Length: 405
Length: 171
Image (cartoon, rainbow over all chains, first blue to last red; front, side):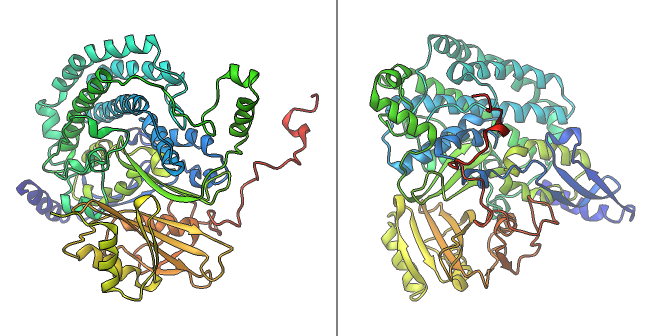
């Protein structure tokens, strides 16, 4: 806290250093913004006095598009929100629809989802933290975790064939069970990842230069973070232990033993450390889920929503009808209003869905965590230097796709 | 501490605002209330500062357009969360298309700032008292509100498409 006070005092005194206020465009396509954002900074010397954000460079009208798409065709849209952890978005949406239709999901599917979602969280946090390293000038630590991220993407490929925009899973479960290759790859990942991860951790976590650069950079207090409706690692870095997985468990998260790491100062270093610890916890969750993976089906019994086997479609009249109805989006949906949220890569990812019984949602709103917390950015970088603003932006894990919808 | 159930929460609110809870239901267990639009701000402020309820977190704000519902064409939906008591709450304020105005929540939750700007951007709902009510995702010079239902997207079930434009003339 004392560190914060001195920073504020420094910012105030710095306003009179020079008196010449310059306007600098940070973005839209600045290499360190990791996406298309614009920040118009007013600087006095190297100190930021104020900043103003411009959004919407990659706005693709997802909410409008969702109003004409059948439910199963909305899953690919969710891929493109936080594209660093698409599987979490996909499954969040599938669970929302399952909640609306009151589907019962087999335990095995729930555990399989937990495994995939935690892999996605690891991939998401690895990118965010290694990029924070890059912005502090440490390029080596950027390349190390990419080997591991590649392995996670290979695991996605085993499930769904895709890597980045995964469209993984279906309403009601998965398109196929874990393949033998998946089991082999996951086992080897669980064996090698912790060691590789600690190697990455050792490059930054106690690195004097990295610590000096990140401690005190872009801090926010717990009160301010709550006022701004922060969620995810950014909120936990301020010391608030809100995690959707624990508060409103979905997909059997209540079965697993994991801790929710929290920070103290809410600065870049704390955000980094919270994500690092979350990766370790995710590995724990995957190990537990994989060890206790229940027997059973990889899909729910939902003929109205889950595409039947191709052999059945060709040989069975009923399956053919279901197939046709699902593909043409003629499935009957009950009217209703539902909110479901999951702990996404960067916070509480919510789906607020209103169905009027038509083939498409009447209204679908995505609660996009980074859209909500990015508005605190000017407050967080005020009084900081431009290089701190770069670090703060990358450590907040603002993903352009999710920000602009 | 005993957990509050939806009924108890509703009773507390109805006690404090006897005439303003116009309708309530519990879809999927989430207490949903329609409240008088002019009282929305006051109720949320009260909920936040209420010692027992302590609704401390604004989850999201959503606009909805019901063009057929005359006199209440627009809805502003506030989803709130109390971490102390672990319940979610949904408040709805309906507005007429002739007076699409509602008090801003920015003075209660700073995070409402961009949520309201987004709602304004897509539905044209005016948040009175908002410090900076501008478009946020769309271009500034846009002169319509794209999420309104009158801007319909192409009907996916239409059958009058000319196949020649889709490379299917040889079928």
